[in-house]
Length: 339
Image 1 (cartoon, rainbow, N blue to C red):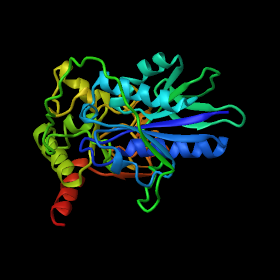
Image 2: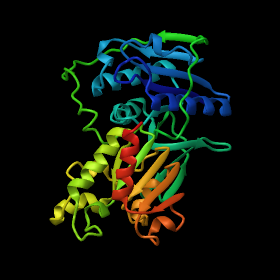
Image 3: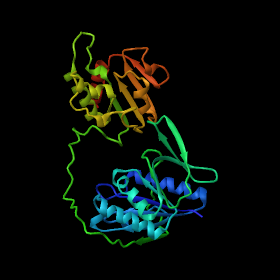
């Protein structure tokens, strides 16, 4: 009979579990209900006591200052200790940067197998993990006989579990961890200012800039500086996340005008990321397959293009505005500034 362990960790503040961790809890509860299996939640945090309220199941936790920050040695030791205490056959965890870099080592220490970027867990008789390959063009269902089986879940694939503080846990147990000699010391965090941060995974809107922003406009001139101001102004006022097509990011290497705040980390599509924002707005993008493939999991897709026959109008966007993106975004910024 299967037993399930869901590994979670606190956010940067240590005050709550990350949204992705709560999504993993949802996946664990759904799987446990379907298999009639025992479910345990494992928490990695400096002070996990207040994080376990409302989870409504057995909770194992490691605690102490060494677990306040992400570090390979401490996180790997903590996850291994939680698994050994639970002796689970299936281990679910969020595919966060903190867990992604340690979970393969934990699976090796446990003598198990691991699969990453899992989107759904199903199967009528055996447990099957579904994930995408070839830049989200091929979906595969995987099943393994090896146990324990570690599954890293992509964020945005499940609804976050809503903890109810009024519900007490069945069990809460602190697990001791024998840490190896630590050679890494976390002295603090350095992050860009909000105005400089353009990649926001939790934003409700993804704003994608295409190569048209740096091309000649109807007056025959290139207006890169104006384009940059319009885009950054919109990001600051709306809190949207910024994406880009590959062609726009690569233009700098070809000697063409570029938007200086764009990097390859902003790429969305066949050669970039596949975000899961509720809404997306593409501007000056051609809407062809290499770019649109990155929008597969966007809930509502809209586009602004002067070309009424571009790829977005061929069933790839819910709404297409045939208009000048410069004029539209200038007016949108004026409306946002007036709120």
